[in-house]
Length: 286
Ligand SMILES: [Zn+2]
Image (cartoon, rainbow, N blue to C red; front, top):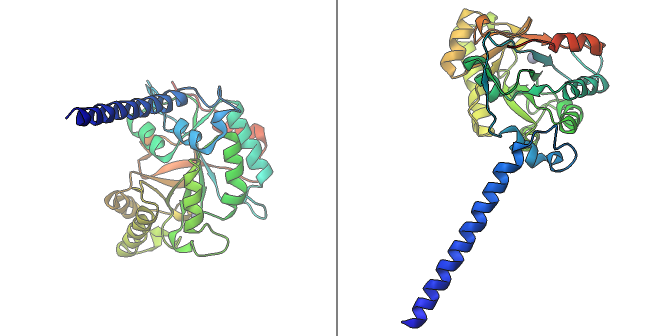
């Protein structure tokens, strides 16, 4: 009997110790990200895992008096050759500019929250999007985003993931693990949606969402229209498919009054000067 009590007592002590250690670890993980990326520069903020934690940290979001104006930057390939391709050196200068000027880059989830509730984690916010999921987003954009601790959203053409110059599923999964990017739908085949029948449109919207939801184990909430083409039917179908926002290529700063499924973006073109870039993202929210 005495012997049993010793075992019980020992076990309870062990449980208490383990419990204490777990609680302590949780407390540490909770408090560590409370410091901002700016102030923890160099040390532990440099690791991918803490970057993820930093991004998901509980921040007090403030309600704006005036409707949020959100600059959504539109990039495609990070390379050179045509008007849709921005060279890595330029992309780097732009990301460094955002970092130095203390912009907060939103994730898709944060952008939805910001636009739909008119709240922000801080007043200088920007949302970086890269369309088409080119492979250079991994080789050229990701290292720059990691280095500057910024976040971007990549809009995937789910029927193109087997193509050599596009990201494969394995690459997307690895990229997402860094906490630096998230993925949204850019449909299955990148067709002009407004030229399709409603049934064809539905297929493009639903099948791409299903593919991303399944393969990336997520609820895909953002849709980006190929070439920005959409009509009233597209917008209705986007909502019915479960998307919460959709992006166009209409030039401008995004505002909810444009419509949740009709948001404008700012096209970043090759050769754009940093001064022009700075003027584009310089939006005052109050
Ligand atoms: Zn596209």
